Length: 253
Image (cartoon, rainbow, N blue to C red; front, side, top):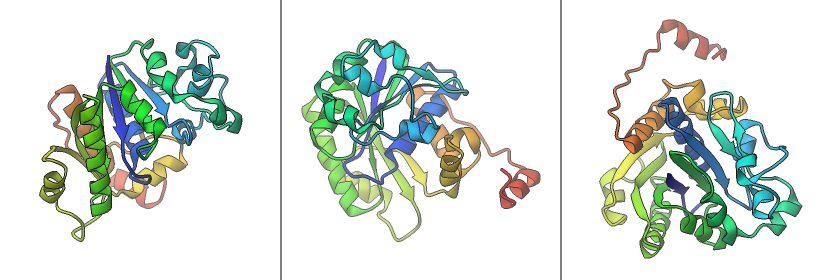
């Protein structure tokens, strides 16, 4: 089982969005995937999918209330999700140090872990529980500098660093890709996710942008990233026609 942590040192980098869409794209490729909300203080995966209030969550499991396999919820797309709790009481009681033990009892080809931002106790517990790391940054110097700190910590913990994903790329007035790689110890940039209005449209509809708008710029970028993780060749030209574009302009798609 590949336990891949999607992490960033700052909030607002698109960490949860990326975890959701990478999981959706891997699922579409026919891979067995479980998406786990390991952001134990501000869990959002359930909110993104409209399953915020459920019978059992990762927090219940961490508080010794049942088997983690009974906290798995099947999305209509076939993706398996373990959401977090939005209950204040659950957030107060949770003990991050049990995360690794609980996740080890799962069985799947891919375990995609959404983590909290920052370098605190909770983030370190998620790093300890994973085997591989995807470092997410925005194309801005403070974000990249903090990403380098994550790389150093992951190296100390002897975790495999898959690479860097640059999120929310907007235009020319940003750091160049080669400059980002140089600042991040020449770790390869394996994905670039553009700022895309379809991401917000998908969030309103409680769905991943990959599932709703697979031919959007962000949808294709996440698809390429999923192919990279599986080693499969990506060859997916946009199949959108005039009618699809017309429906989007009208807000009907």
